[in-house]
Amino acid sequence: MRIFIYPGSFDPVTNGHLDIIDRASKICDKLIVAVLINRSKKPVFSMEERVAFLDEILEGRPNIVVIPFSGLLVDFMKKQKATTVIKGLRAVSDFEYEFQMALLNKNLNPEIETLFMMTNINYSYLSSSAVRELAAYGGNIRDLVPDIIVDRIYAKFRSNE
Ligand code: ADP
Image 1 (cartoon, rainbow, N blue to C red):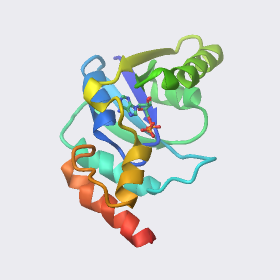
Image 2 (image 1 turned 90 degrees about the vertical axis):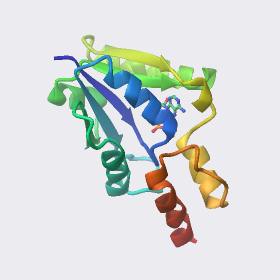
Image 3 (image 1 turned 180 degrees about the horizontal axis):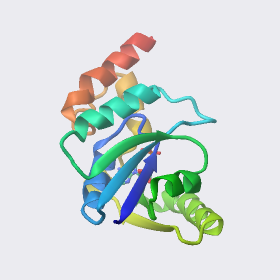
């Protein structure tokens, strides 16, 4: 059984993430969407909110599971019996960091592979931080995240004011 893992903060999940999730889930038997418990950055959305958004959006997708994680990705992967990390690449600016992470993980566990998926051209500009920034100033996020979370994202920024 090929178990792949797609790690990220998903603060909040965007249509760019979902595009990668869709495509990745087709080339493995099980895809684990691993939601990072950040140590350095405080997320805008709590772990519970980030996981709930993903769970709702991915409901009915039998080979996708959403699991929070902290600590080293290689340790989590071992526990979950995952073999492969999936990463999305938007621009050259993503490359340097991802290149370093992939080599670091390879060094920690040579059996782990990292696969990079090129962004869908329509989402190449899209990031969670762009969504947060737009939502905070009342900009239009409707084409950037799934409909069912739009209002909750706006509500979050209203309640933070
Ligand atoms: P962001 O960079 O949007 O804050 P994350 O840190 O949660 O998101 O990213 C998790 C993974 O998703 C990373 O591999 C990142 O490169 C990828 N990713 C994020 N947005 C996109 C997008 N629009 N297209 C392709 N990959 C993406």
